[in-house]
Each structure stands twice: as C-alpha cells, then as structure tokens.
Image (cartoon, rainbow, N blue to C red; front, side, top):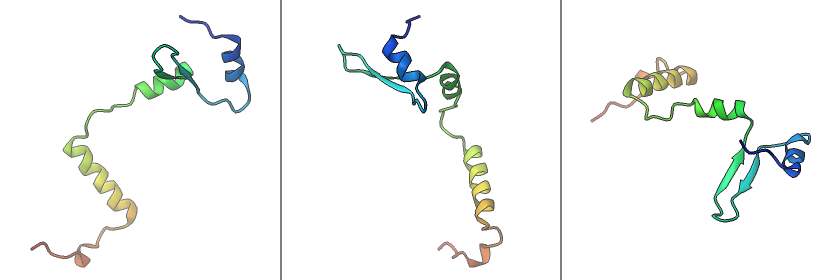
Length: 79
C-alpha cells in the first residue's frame, strides 16, 4: 500500500475536499483518489447491458410516473 504525502493529506483533509485527481508524470495517465467506501459503492454497480425485461420494467415505471396511463385513446394507430 502506498502512503499519502503531506500535500495529499492536506488536500484530502481540508473542508469541502473533493476526490483528488492525480497524474502519472511518466505516462500522463490520470487517476482519481477516492475513499475506499466510495470506490466500493461505485465498483458494485452492474454495468452489463439491460435485459429486455429490465427495459420493459423501466418503461412501465416511466409511463406511470408521467401519468400516461389511460392515454391510449389519444395515440395514433400504427399504419
């Protein structure tokens, strides 16, 4: 495990601190320094493609939230 420098500690401990951005000076690759709890929460997200069932459920929730139920009479018939 790598220990933080004094400069990094100061940046993390100041009020209103946001995740710190770091750069590898050799490769210019960029990194974000997050508290472990935030990293674990982000790593737990399922980034796989949505299934047809998941899309149908989201569509139904959206229709309900927008109050579109019962609006079938106002929709145009498909040719």
